[in-house]
Length: 86
Image 1 (cartoon, helix red, strand yellow):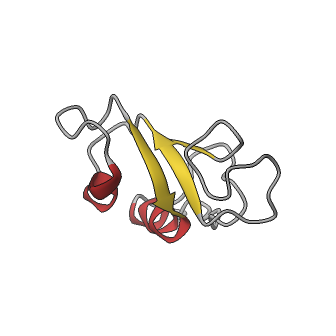
Image 2 (cartoon, one colour):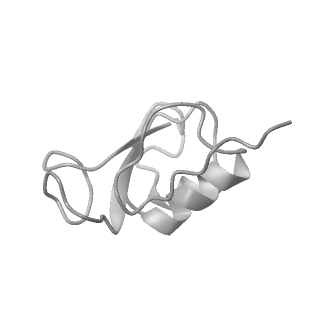
């Protein structure tokens, strides 16, 4: 999934370079994820849509649920959980 926060994204605060975001935009997850479905813009196409204003706590929970971040960065406010070693 893509996680973004900037002045053109559905986030709060809606600005570039905030010290911490409370809500962020998720886009195009690779599979349906029930934790974020309440924010899904197109529930019939959950992998081909955006999820506006998702609380950062929910995003952190999704990252933990899926074993940590595979690559990339997250906006300030989302906890960057490293992958669990197997």
